[in-house]
Length: 136
Image (cartoon, rainbow, N blue to C red):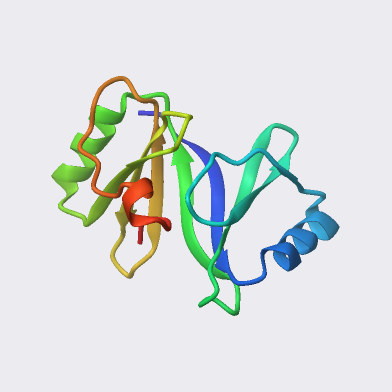
């Protein structure tokens, strides 16, 4: 299974201020974001959204939400590996894009988002439409 870095995600109350800092320091620009039912923004370098900002009023200081990696391996195979690990996880699907997201809580609390293409059905444990915000 081959992985590549995809993005970092931050929770913060002031998305515009964080966006401006990434623009000033790294030249990242706001771009397309799927229609999640919570506010946020994706910041791009060329065609890659390197930083995702999740706007949450209860996060006065920016906090790392998760680190994401992606693969072309089938989501079912990724989920089987995660389940075999015994680590706590949640499964969601990006609205309109169809990418499966498998959020895995590592020992110590760090969350990895593992993104894989939808090639079949998975059991969703976090439905953005019903639960709103990003999985925790």
